[in-house]
Image 1 (cartoon, rainbow, N blue to C red):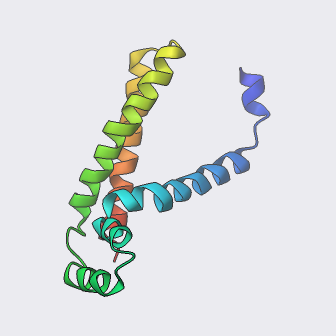
Image 2 (image 1 turned 180 degrees about the vertical axis):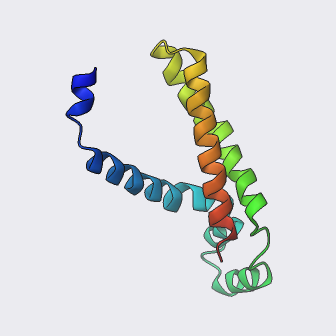
Length: 119
């Protein structure tokens, strides 16, 4: 309702939105789009091999388009099922579900592209 909207704290809403976006980028998106994180976790018990692999493949696949692709995959294969399941149980219209999903696929694609290209 309009009454409920007037009583909301927009500074808190925007502040928490930014905080949650950074949290999502740091903990989820970065590990999805940067392949070196996977190599590092696999070779953690072999420091000499870890250093060699990270040196040899330091900037492999660290491009904006590659990060966007992985961000889009995250949106399509994680966000879409999540929103579709919730939307069906909440009896939301499919148009609204698609609007939400497309928004997040774009956001995650941009987030992934920026994080992957940032060196």
